[in-house]
Amino acid sequence: MSNGISGSFSSAKVDVMVDMGNPVLNLAVDGFLKIGAVAATKVAAEETYDILIRHGSISTEKLEYSVENLISSLFLTHAISFSFIDMLKCTPFSFFMPSLIVLMSLQLKRMCREGASWGAVAGVYVGMEYGVERIRGTKDWKNALVSGAVTGALLSAASNRNRDKIVFDAIAGGAVATAAEFLNYLT
Image (cartoon, rainbow, N blue to C red; front, side, top):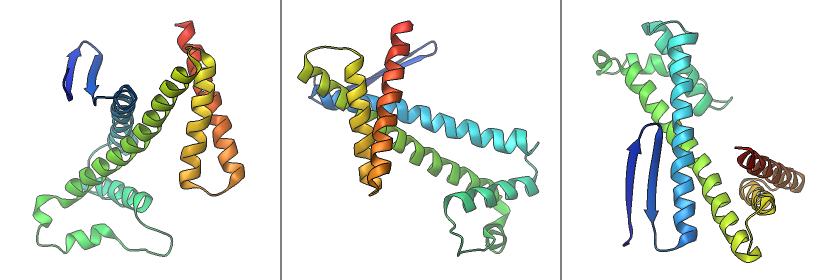
């Protein structure tokens, strides 16, 4: 098979086949895409719940409140304080209902950011597990333990310089991966 992407959709299962020419890259990209899609869906569900259920409706005031909260949680630091909605009301495009457009844009950015974050973790883990399996020559729960610990340590070290936090994340990664592997044996 030449390099490419193919996919299928049947019932509740989506399967994507990625051929990058290398089995490690194939698995890493496959894990990235699948888990990234899960994270993006999670954000979409959270945002929909926030707007429709928690706030009760899509009134202009509640939409503006949601936009302000989303902006403050995503972009604003404690030192910066301004009303983004007030700024939008001053634009000549206010008749396009900019609150909804901004909200959708921010939700899409959050979906992409979370999808990329979760996908990166999955891609590193799957690639690491494949490598450990190849080195050890066997497929068992110990591969998940080592892969989860190394993935946790690598990702923590990339974003953190605190040694204790890196060790904690390595332990947590190993524990979560091992627990997931044991749950796979039960089903």
